[in-house]
Length: 176
Image (cartoon, rainbow, N blue to C red; front, side, top):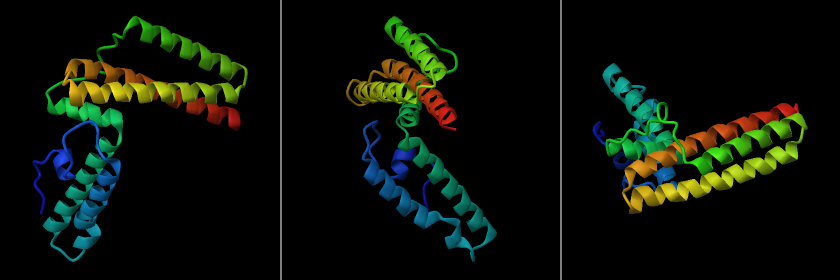
């Protein structure tokens, strides 16, 4: 069947890099799922059914990891032996910390004013910043091999994800 020791990129026959072809990832995932899906092993032995379930689960986890830019970067860094220290290292550049404070204040003001439009505009700004950070992350990992810098960018992106979630929840609450 498949080699249990393959990393996520090998599993989908993709180059080990931050920049990936999402269409190829999706196609490889569907093909692999077709090969290992438990329904194909309904008449097999219990050991074969269990192995199929394990492979389907592994394929799902690998796909979810590679599909998300932050998770993909975190995984690439883990392959290099780099811990992103997201839980323990909260140090950020001063300008990013100032930007965080401004975003938090803008979210609070828009929420207080019941201003969905302001929240949507802020969400677009955060999305643009996340896209910019992802470009920097691609360069740090794929071109410069600057893994400590990449770990710092992952921490920034994790924060941006949290802010995006907070804004989306605020919009949903105001729409109700």
